[in-house]
Image: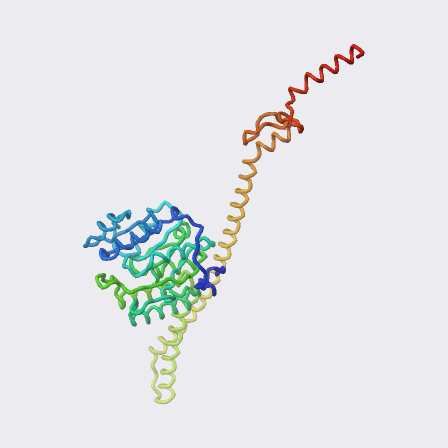
Length: 390
C-alpha cells in the first residue's frame, strides 16, 4: 500500500494486495458499540475470538434486550455507557482500552470480522487511522437508495469543505491508534462521531488511509438505530459547523457571499423601483447596504482566519518534526548508554567479565589452546638451566 499522506486516497493496488499485518493481535482491542444487538453480537464476538482477538470490548447503550448478557457469555468484556449515543460509547470505550491499537465496528452484523486484518495491515505500514470503504464490496440490498444518495452527498460535501478524499467517512468499520484518537478533540454523542473523527484527522494531521471492505445487509431480525433524515441532517450540520476551525475561509466565506448576494439583490430592486417608478425605499436601501457590508467583512474575516489556521498548522508540523527528532536522538543516546560499560572496560583494559558474562581480554586462553598456567613452569625451568650454565 503506497503512502497516501493525510488525504486518504486509496492506493491503486490496495484492492489487489493480500492483507498482512505485523501487529500482534494481543496489542489490539476490538471495540463494539451496541444498542439492542442481541441477534448479532454473539456471532461477531465469536468470529473475532476464533481469529485470535481475545480483547473484545462491548460498550452497550443500555439495551433493553439481552445484548450485554450474550456478549459476556461469548467472552467479551462488557460495560454500560453512562450516557446515550454512539459517540459517547466510543469515547468511553477508548478510555478503557490499555493497548495501543483499536478496531472499531458496529454490532449489527453488516461488517465482516475477517476484514480486520486488512485494516491492521495499513496501521502496520505507518498509518494512524484507517477507514473501511463499504462501497468497494457492497452486497445488493445492504444500503437503501436513500442512504446511498445521502452518503454520496455527505462524502462530496466533506471533500469540498475539508479538502480530503476519504471516500466513505460514515463507515463504522475503522482501525486506529489510541494515540491518534486522543489527539482528536471529540464531543459528538450520536452518529456524527464518524464525521467528527474524519474532520479531526484532517485538522490534526493524522495519517489516514482507506482500504476496501465488504458490507452486507443487516439481518432481518436486527433493527436499525439510524434515522436517515434526522441523522443525515445532523451530519450535514456537523460538517458545516466543524469547518469553522478547520476551513474558516469556507465557513465565513459562504455566509459572506450569501449576505453580499442578498444585499445586492435588494439593492437592485431598490434601484429599479427608483429609476422606473420613481419610488424610493430608504429602509430597504439601508438593509441592502448593511448586508453587503456584512458580507464583505465576513469574507475578509474568513481570509484572515484561514491565514491564521495555515500558520498554526505549519507551526504544529515544525513542532511535530522537532519532537520526532528529539525522540529519535533520545533513543540513540539510550542505546549508547546501554553499551557504555563494555566500551569503558575495553578502553581501560579491564580484566573482569564483560556484560555478557564472557572473560576479559587478559583472561583469555592463548591462540594455541594451552592454558597460561601450563606455560609458566616450562619458562621457569629454562631460566634455571641458563643460570647454571647448562
